Image (tube, rainbow over all chains, first blue to last red; front, side):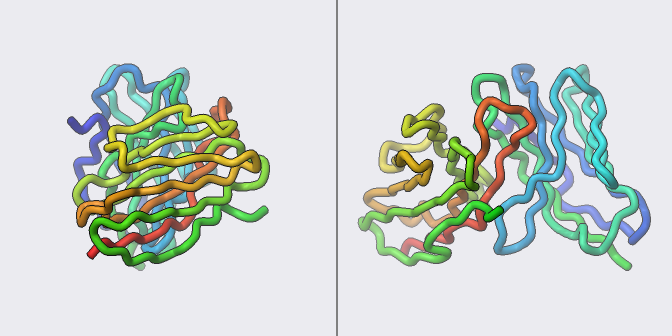
Amino acid sequence: DQQVKQNSPSLSVQEGRISILNCDYTNSMFDYFLWYKKYPAEGPTFLISISSIKDKNEDGRFTVFLNKSAKHLSLHIVPSQPGDSAVYFCAASASGGYNKLIFGAGTRLAVHP
Amino acid sequence: KAGVTQTPRYLIKTRGQQVTLSCSPISGHRSVSWYQQTPGQGLQFLFEYFSETQRNKGNFPGRFSGRQFSNSRSEMNVSTLELGDSALYLCASSMPGRLDSPLHFGNGTRLTVT
């Protein structure tokens, strides 16, 4: 039972444009959501997070939007840069286990010059 | 500040053997979590340790175990290795109980079981 789903295995975007990565979840107990970026042969790197009391969080070029009623979150990267090319993982957790992250399968983003 | 350090980076073992992986968390981080990444199952939570006590556990068989030392360093052990245990094992650390302290991952130990 996949509690966190990233339905797009890959995404290709031109440099300078917006990248939008999507994530859906099924468990209504989740109240903390994170995005990680992963390069080959490295561990995931934390990008941005959002708690369920918010619907938007920004950090530089990265913005995460949370729609609780739809159980959907998205990561916007503006503008996209070639160095953003990586696999992006959405993760979720619930109170009492904030380090017990449930990860999506990941979306491979390719940013082309 | 040094990141999460995992040793060794690569390991090759034979079915039936056991293996121990090591993790040194970021200085000041007292919670250590372990994850397994495989192509088929993705990233899955193994367990979390805080103050030398297991605080959360994922859905893995008892062959997978771990421990944490008083300096917050952690080890995980897999006994009676199976081919399906071949994976990237990731350790992550955080300051527990704080939403502004997300998990920070090491670069992992790549275990191959033959």
